[in-house]
Length: 246
Ligand code: ATP
Ligand code: TYD
Image 1 (tube, rainbow, N blue to C red):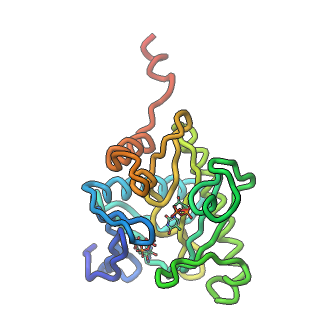
Image 2: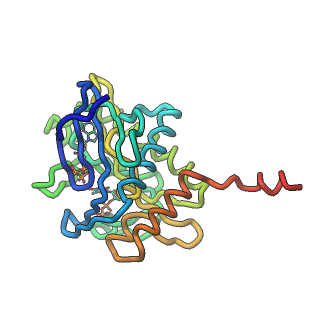
Image 3: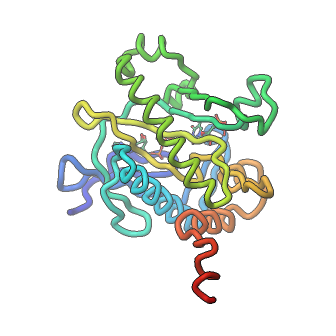
């Protein structure tokens, strides 16, 4: 498998062709942006943490019946994926009120949203990603009603699987954004699921363990990413070590 020309350079990732027309390489760069690109930095190792956490989540989701684009990691920053025809929707699932939903609506920060709230934005930087509704998505032919139903069901399944997984590590999955694409007719989860695209709070302390640390200068971003990546990917086996010692 050979890396070929650059297909697309986004704000945090670069996408390359390969010698297989059905596969792409996604390179997670060390660039980080917030506020519609208004705040930008390069943080050493950021790409590596996000790539590995994404790979971990994609593998976990595949094991539990969610179709994803993930094939394998090529090195610390590069992921081999299935080429998708991306659907320009940012599908956001919210379990607790935070971020834009608190700025735009009368929700109190941290209040639970039961059932979870799905918000879908139009992925179009030139229009600042406006919020859509089902009728607009269908009128704009971004997805058919059947596809939209599948997208929402998949988003809720991802939410339920990852919320349970993270809770075991003492982490609350507050909200996250995912993107879908099509491989033939099948809807497939693409892009990334990482500290850049999720809001994670420590269950005990309420401390932010995600890009909010960067957005709002809450502390050492890379120290947080390092800690949370270890916590997600190398969970401590509670109780087991103690029992074995006896
Ligand atoms: P944003 O940061 O708002 O998500 P961006 O385009 O700047 O937008 P990047 O993550 O930097 O985002 O770029 C990665 C690009 O690759 C995105 O446009 C994403 O939709 C696209 N992409 C992700 N997975 C695949 C895939 N399997 N096939 C084709 N394109 C993909
Ligand atoms: P949201 O609260 O709408 O935006 P912001 O964090 O900018 O105030 O974000 C909800 C979640 O979705 C949060 O975990 C970040 C993620 N997200 C992205 O990763 N990319 C995006 O373009 C948007 C709008 C959200």
